[in-house]
Image (cartoon, rainbow, N blue to C red; front, side, top):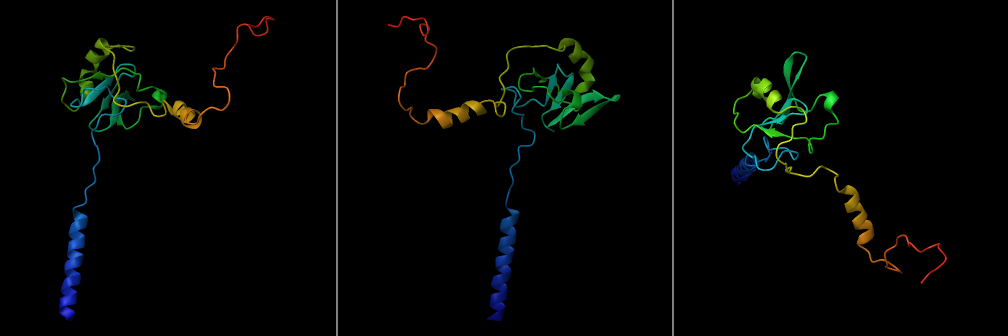
Length: 165
């Protein structure tokens, strides 16, 4: 009987270990950023003309020139910290499939000068907090019915002129 209990306990531990081994974690590595343009799921790089930099979608890294070399970082350099990635233009490099898009930097810099704007781009997602005030206002004020006079309140052009109809 003692042997049977040990075998059942061993089997239970074995099954518990194998169940844990089958747990998966789904992480979207290499997914385009929310500020990326819609319609280019297969692209690997964007060129950002305003910054003269690249974005590696697969590695989620910016590539920019500094201190005599090309730097790969998860964030833009300090001098570009306030740059609006949602409104800035992104040139999608659909024809390049290597690991160093900056090998064509001289061509990109001439073809896509700072301030370059091609066709209109729609981003994959919205800027965080874009409609935060509107949503907050609607949830607090417009969800409940108004009390009393429901007419629009505004300026009466006759008010204060002596004659009212």
